[in-house]
Image (cartoon, rainbow, N blue to C red; front, side, top):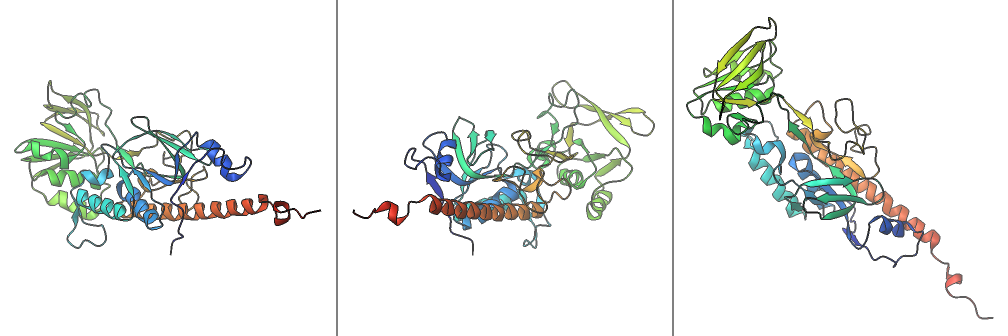
Amino acid sequence: MSPDFTPALKLDLGATPPGTAESDQQQVADGDSTVHDVVIVGSGPAGYTAAIYTGRANLKPVVIAGSVTAGGDLMQTTEVENYPGFTDGIMGPELMATMQAQAERFGADVRYEDAVKLELDGEVKKITVEGGEVLHAKTVILATGSAYRELGLEDEKRLSGHGVSWCATCDGFFFKGQNIAVVGGGDSAIEEATFLTKFADKVTLIHRRDEFRASEIMQKRAFDDPKIEILWNKQVIGISGESKVQELSLEDTVTGDVSALPVTGLFVAIGSDPRTDLFKDQVELTPEGTVAVQGRSSKTTLPGVFAAGDVLDPTYRQAVTAAGSGCVAAIDVEHYLAEHSARAQDQDQLTAPSAAQRSPLPH
């Protein structure tokens, strides 16, 4: 059974003698504010699982889920077939909605806001959200996930929403009866391509190597789909079109030859990068750019700061591993708070006046 922690501390400046651990925490808190036991920055399988576990531990977690990115990448995924417990699969958005509801059942406060500044040093952490509100917390779980990687082409952003997309689930419907392209070679690229065959007449899958990185089952789906044509050893070097995508410029990665591919849509599925901009100068990162943690734990280089999900995982990047990572972070938070509560109690006992000091004997 998880320990039953006090969910939040109301600061009352001046009520505690200076020099105690509690008074130090009050001074860090910058005024009269609630100090939450835990604030989770991000959602998705990692953030919501952490919220479920910390909620069941009576820590009353606050989840800064994001104004647009709530639910993470699975909100833009079609059918999830490999998440345990769903024999017939489940749609990504449905899975995230279910996880969020479960977290809220255990008392999680899910807020559709974006964190714009994190101050993670010190006993009490500060999380500033859009609009200027500052939350204070004893611990923070970083579950910010990853962001879609772009090709870096001149017209990519200009034609975003006008034929260039990173989400087949969101935009596939708009390409009924058209010829479109997907660039990438992993599971996500093949999943995008196979999904888009529901709408497009033809999907050209462009990969810069001569073999896929995707799993065998996903590769077979691409090879067996009559609507998918695969272009090996090709990379997109240009996107043409005035008001919408009309043509791609492709370069052969072996010969250097350049060719044109007429399409009306381009879906980019070349991976993602961990979202660390808010805290990359505060916690240590790995050479891959993910958050560095201690061993198999979720502990970062800052006390009271933990990480979960894709933001620390450069290798597996699966919904189920992200969920497990969220569980690890939640348990690490429980242990951290329990240890600090015990230390504070020991310090209070050491500094408390003895019975003789409180009631001096009469002369």
